[in-house]
Structure formats: structure tokens, C-alpha cells
Image (cartoon, rainbow, N blue to C red; front, top):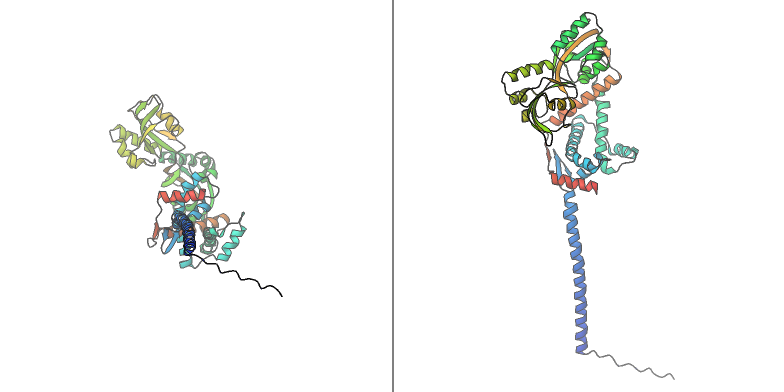
Length: 421
């Protein structure tokens, strides 16, 4: 018979032991709670820092175009897209331009979709993103979409608005500096000299110079787009075939030559430099006329504000401040530091072929005309592009559009740093 196992007496927990266990448990809970609190505090601190430093800035509205809003994250992506391959300083320089691009893109999209019913689907954009080399992220979908939209507008919508054929003229032309020169060249042409030879030598317009005066067949609008002036076309399309024109003035046409009138106010020896005031004019005849006015006592600053074609002349009255050797164009610099030009005296007109000025005279001869000649190739592309550009300009200038930007320089630099990081 097995021996019956003796029962161990039940353990009796004393009050002191119970109290000690309860205290240890309490300490454990306090330590655990403290650890959890510290961890939560760190997480909250990190989370708050991330929210304040990253999430909130990225989701702030920084551009509004009518009812559409764009946040900082969108702006950063735009900087990445349009600044691709650029150095950080160049991206910083693009920061303001990218704001304008975002606004322009959205206005084009709204106008094309809302008024013309023309859009680009997400599927089409995604295919284009994959086609790019290297493929692009969907983050750039909007930027690629507007590129595709502009192409579609030009090649489909505006293609339909370009006529198949229009009235055209076969034109010979050259652009000259002033009326005296134009009259002199006209006399040489009347005496039998070759138009092409003289245009290739003397014309100040790149197109007519390169083509030696023969502009070939031109439609009125195409000619205006190529030359960035309507004056030549308006004359040619009203002129008699075979007749050489009198000089035709064009105040808006640009040319690569200008004339300086210079007054050295003071010269410095260490470091070498000169304080100068200048007037930039479009022709030698005009420069001589203005010089005569100055010699007669008229105020240099007043005439500079009124007549000078130098950028900033109206604000600065022609005053350039201290100019160091090599600090300006070669022609202007040589005149300023010519010892013969003493302080307080006025220079003769100084020709400078590196400056762009406006104004000159056309000589035109219409060789032939056709009332209905076909428009093809590059001419069609030029007209489509012109129609597109005119449409975009009208959209951007529409006073009913509400366009706002909340970006300051600090926010722009924050975005540039994100792109750099």
C-alpha cells in the first residue's frame, strides 16, 4: 500500500510581505509608466517637429489660380522638373520663374478644357511618362500634360484655323539705318546697282541680309511674324509690282547698331575708372541732332530720359556711375578712356555694333503677286505657332482670371533646399 503523500501546509503571506510586494509592483508600474511617457514624449516631439518642419510647410497653399490651389509640395516637384540638370544656384534663380510657369500652365489648362473642350487624359499622360528616357514619375504628370496640351492645341485646333492659301507677294527688301542712307542707296539702285549685292552688304535686318534682299514669297501675317513688325508687309501689299519704294520708316524694327553720346564727368586714377553719363541713339543722324541740342545748352539728363534707348535710361538719366576699364562694350570703353575726351566735354557720336536699337528705313521692291497662293511647310508651322502664342497671351491677360502667389523669398529658398537635399 503506497504511502499517502503528505500535504504541504499552505503558505501564509504576512502583511509585511504583501505590503513589500505591492510596493515593488507599484515601483515597477511607475518605472514602466515613466518609460512609456518618455517614449511618447520623444515620439510627440519628433512628430511635432516633422509636422511643423515638413508636413505643414509641404501642404500649405502657396499658389492659387481661380479656384485651383497648389501647395508647397507641388511647387517643389515643379522646381525638380523644370530645374532638372541645373546647378543649385541656377535652380534658385528659377524659383520665381517656376511660380509664373505653374500659373500659366493652369490658366492654359482651364481655358483649353473649359472653353475649347480640349484635354489630355491621364492614360495618355502616363504613356508619355513611360516613353520618356529615363521614364518620369507620376509626380510630374501635370507638367507633361500641359506640354502635350500645347502641342495638341497647335497641331489640331490651330491647324484648322490656318487657311490653305492666301494672298502673297514676292518681295525684295533691305533695312537701313537712316533716311539719308536709304536715299543714297535708292539712288544707287536706280542707277543700276544690284539689289541683292547691296542688301547683303548693308541691310541691318538679319533675314534680309542673309537672303541678300530676296525674301521670296510671303504672306502678310507670316512676314510680320518673321520680322516682328508689320510695316514692311503693309507697304508691300499695297505697292505696285516692279516699283522701287521711297524710304519707308519703321520705328519698331530692331537692328544691331547704336550710337553713343558720352560725357565723362570725372576720372579716377586709383583704381582707374571714370564717372560717365551717356545717351544711346538708333542712328548717326539722330545722334548728331541730339549732340547739337546739348551743345546749345539743353540738359543731358532730360534728353537721356526722353530719347536714350539704353535700358534704365529714364530712371538713371543716362548716368552709369563709375566705369572701370573693360566694364562695358569695347566701343563705349575705348571712347570713355580716350585721353582726348576730357572731363566735362561731349563726345562725337560713337558707333557700337554690339548694341540693339530700334528704328530705321526699308527699301522695298515687289517682284510679283498672287492672290491665292498655297501655304506649306515652315510657313504653316509659323502661323500655327503665332495663333497659339496670341491665344496664350490673351488667356494670360484676361482680367477675369484671379492669380495669386503666397511665396516669399524665405519659402522659395526652403523649396530650393528641399530640391538640393
